[in-house]
Structures are given as C-alpha cells and as structure tokens.
Length: 90
Image (cartoon, rainbow, N blue to C red; front, side, top):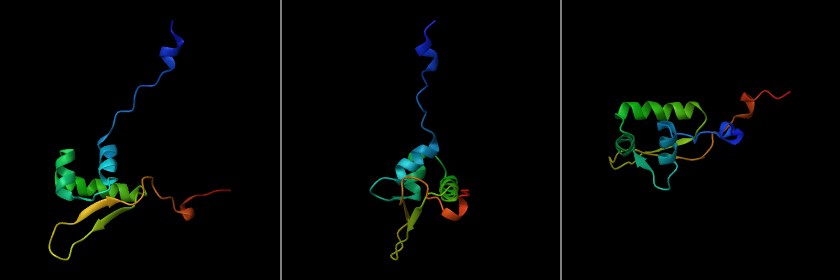
C-alpha cells in the first residue's frame, strides 16, 4: 500500500466565491454587470455575494461616478480585515 498516496490532498477546487475575490482583486475595478457576466450570475446574486464578502471582513469599495456611469467594485485588501474588538484574546 502506498502511504504517500493516502496522505496527499486533493487540489483545492476554486469556488465561485474564490473567483469573485480574484475578480475584485484585479487592478481595474469592474461593474456589477461585468462581474455577473464573468461568474454566470444574475446581478442581484452578485450584489448579495459582495455583501457577504463585506460581512466576512473583506473591504470591498464601491466607486460611484457622478456622470451617470455604473458603479464599479474593487477589493481594497486581499485578506479579511479583523477588528481587534471582535477578537477575544485572553
């Protein structure tokens, strides 16, 4: 029996959440419509996923234009920001 084969982990399958984080982490911000098209989601689903990322501690910035163009979204930090008040260290 090959012991090494049993201990090797399967490669991590990229989830839609991982894909959304990668899209938001690009240098150029994206519109809600562009994010939805890339993920194959409807816009309300994409908006809800962005809200869940914010709830998980990710800083997602919404860039609004005064000239009527659609808002654009981008990720400020790659990893969730942890509020020190939320962490209970004894």
